[in-house]
Picture 1 (cartoon, rainbow, N blue to C red):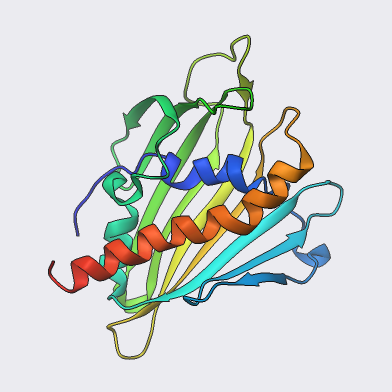
Picture 2: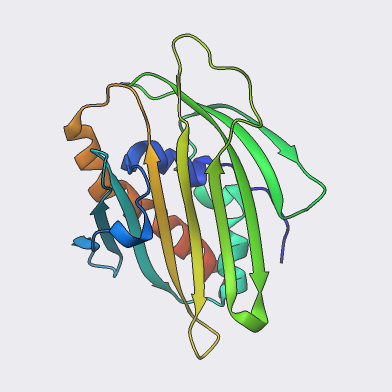
Length: 216
């Protein structure tokens, strides 16, 4: 597997686009609601998060590629060329563990106030246990101090989980996100993003993984 550091726009441009929010405790978690199923098989689900006005988001699809290839594609920033178009600046901090790293990123959108954040990434793969996962969470341990005119995102947690199917040649991919983008983003912007941005990101990952599996 290629060891690369994915830029968080792969995961957190969606954070600001999907506008998901605060995590609920396991005992109080509401059921997932299927919001949309695309014609090409991507299911988009949301659920309320008690004590907040925002929602957690989940996208699920089957990818015609082995799980290690899917995870490799998820860790390659070139997979998400469309998703990264609003990145104005980014910075990487590697650690002694090649599967743990930090990224700071500034996003400049044409309508809303710029956002920035620092994230801790962790990637884990255990073929014997069928574990293929990339996780991230907001952290104050990396990045510059908050700056005037930029909204600091302090809550952005999620994962990409890749579950191999019995044939070993396909996988079910789940993208989970719970984020509060902060600031004064209109509700209609959030609703549009919730329905359409997640499928676009999942297609980028699915198409790139399947291209690699086909040796193209």
